[in-house]
Length: 270
Length: 267
Image (cartoon, rainbow over the protein chains, first blue to last red):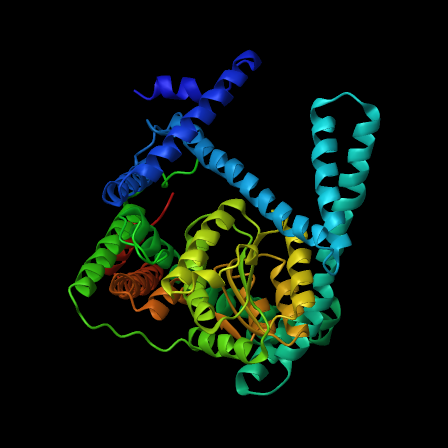
């Protein structure tokens, strides 16, 4: 039943792409125009129906029994096409995101606000990355590919790594504050963390190496205490949190799916 | 492809039962049943934190995490909508850096709407909601820079956070901001607890919008969630008893225990 639709959204030969793009633009403009001009009374059920059908599709696909040989049910093949709609939406909103960047930083440069040169560097880097990225992917110019490599591998990746490395220092300062003994809870936290850390390093294990490896007394060896804390105390707490989050996620999904959520995000009903 | 497991009955039964309970409680709440929610200190601190920013005349930062558009981001926006109403009332400046373009688009509408609802649409500054980058550490450095430059007074972090959580929280701490955070990522909760003044843990995150809005639908849903958790906890206790009976090989009872364990064994 959905076969023609899937064929329509499947990758097309390059010669057809401009027609598809033009068609998509016209279709999007029409849809947006229709949605804007729809009276609120009609818009509300329309949004509710679309939301319900979208949710129903994924729920049915997930719960419908599968054919054991193919590991699929009758909806599985359409998942990719449905997911593409999400990617399309992301692509469209990215334009709005870039416009936001241009607006904020363009104004900084135009008004020569404090630190305007940072905004200039950001916009220059953004434009350079887009141009050389496209040239790298679709062009054949070796120079452009080299520039892109310097920008991406030489700069961006390293800057990412630098930010990531900072976390180590931040963890130290945050841990220092958290582990200061100010209350019973902080003391328990500190003692537990200390035992787990001791259990992770050879020197910690060496401290109780004189204890026998068998019998009940072996439970007091640091590595066993660490293992007990992680697998019994910590795992139980994490599972409890995970159950709570799972049920919470189910509740909010239900409210959205059945459109019970109206008024929570937007004060006026949409 | 990810599906319900080959043997779907237990998943289906528990999920449908929980869903029915949640809907039942929502309907009861909508019919006017009084419901009680325990005190959540992190959420009570929101007003205090906004008040501090008002006194200091410095901005309020709201970070919806780096996750994409989904229920976690929607929940974060619901909390930020409440915060924005307060900031609109008191005339605080807000800053909301966003990493996901779809979240950015919706966030702008939600915050604008909150200002309108408070009767101060003129106070809404579209530049206060900013798309920075969808790359994790580019976004992290952008937010850290904003915190340092703007010397924020208050920081609210709700959403999906990963390794960058520590960068936000510690930078906020450096400028002396009061910080309230909540995430569903259990790996990031310890970092927030260590670095922030208040942390919303686990399903308190999903309780937040009900707690602050007192909307009957959400309150009912929250109570339904608690019943759902009770159901799961009961199954855990029954499972433990069943496993013990099987291990002890108690005549008759061990067969019942085996049947129960088999019912909830996912293959």
